Image (cartoon, rainbow, N blue to C red; front, side, top):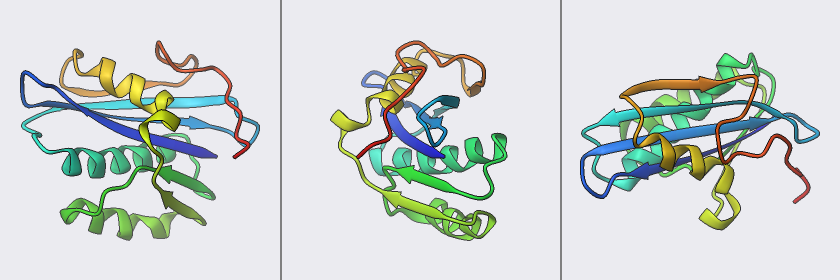
Amino acid sequence: MKINVDAALSKNSTTAAMAAVAWDDIGKFQGASALVMEGITDAETAEALACREGLNLASDLLAQRNLQGKGMGPYGPIVRELSARRGSFALVDVTHENRGMNGDAHMPAKSSLYSPVGRHVWFLYPPEGVCNSHSLID
């Protein structure tokens, strides 16, 4: 399973949205989630929270054997939590992708800025702007 994560910050408020999108080994959509929070003003914290949201989505999808996450920033207690939770998975590979390669995770993050505060999850159909299938060939 591959999970991409991203975060978006509102320009006009302290609202942030952190999103995760998951695909199986052949690139079929498995699920997506977005967490909308108030009081987040810096990108590094939002990106770290997006990594946490990726782990939460992996748990929701019962993907305890293999997890690949994208876009982790190295900040604060969230990173310590991520490191501690890595033990729950057989494989965790955290790497960075630029925004141009991470559009499927950026779209729900950006559009969720206008959603109510809380966690939003999609399992059967992807949120608007996210592909239903994805090529996993690098």
